[in-house]
Image (cartoon, rainbow, N blue to C red; front, top):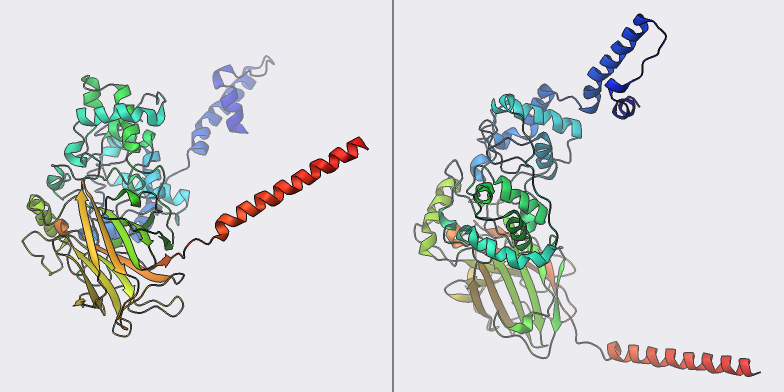
Length: 531
């Protein structure tokens, strides 16, 4: 109520009682001044740095370190490294390049986290607790005592939405975005293997086709903000200088924002538990066959293998897209994922060496020569009883797994494993084949195999029976080999039976019945009218 009164009637316009008494006037003025002093306190909740320090030491110290320098006990396993609060270089801000973030910027990061990094959101902390942590974090750097951050003023989106994407492609070339992000935005530009952050650690160029992992949020508005603010401490610059120099215009930057927003889906892909494999009379050919286009696609996230040493805490491959089809005799699965390098690639050796130095300090060195890219598809050895599945890390001695293993230079083989690092090649006679292509930062691999297998010890597929499936991926140019790689949980692949004639007959029967009833109703109404 006090806030409404003061905001509706500023102090200079408050009418004091006209009773001819100077004492009353001074009392009124005193009350007004007191309200003015108390009002900011009520509108801006207090921040308690001491309470924030206790929360910081419980939840943040492991990564950011006791003094906030980004050197906590877990930091050496992370890429990118945790934020150095003392240096105060913040990537995600609404302020100009080189400036500090606002309190709202910091609160947003604590609430939402930073997708694609090890920084999570903290829903377990209340707003007051977050404000207390914010106060403590700011106390770690002297810069917050000297500056008052201000939000960078931006032009409004001129509208047009996706229609502006075509013009944005031209701005993408003008600003040489492809040097890092690649022609299709998948982080495979010619400069990508050389990128480093301000501390000298390797940093990946963002994969613009996966906007749900953007640190600063999806959508043209958030992307436009990044263009103007830059991402301090990384190779991503602010385009404010290019704007002021006339290299690009405000309209160009909005066009570019809409173009980048259109390089990926408008929302994060939804996770489904089953790959539905349709039945067709004819199977598609290679990975680029247009017959794949009208088949449903299923997305499955992958994470770093951190259960068994040596581990991978910052994997390259973060998900796969899967399509499946069968003809009653043979199964074909197309698996697609983004990988900026066609490994083994000598051009990425510098990157491989940097990754090894930054992450692999656990006493298990990687080979010095370029490594291949690998993909594994895991099934149980035989159809499971109900929903029972082997251990997800390639099974164990009690329940081994059946593997399809693809090598970027040697093709595909079948395998059997009883745990990570125990894979042995088997020849079941099933006739597994694979074809693959890499283009502009994306792999597509098509596996084909007969549904039935003559070997009683190897899995056969049948319509209507869901079979567990899981995925493994290794990026050779990031030194991923052995137990270092990306893994998924168990999902299912289900072969659909042929479409029943009832699917086509039932609508026809319904149409005829409905039409007949309609004619009957019309005739009856006509007779009633004539009578």
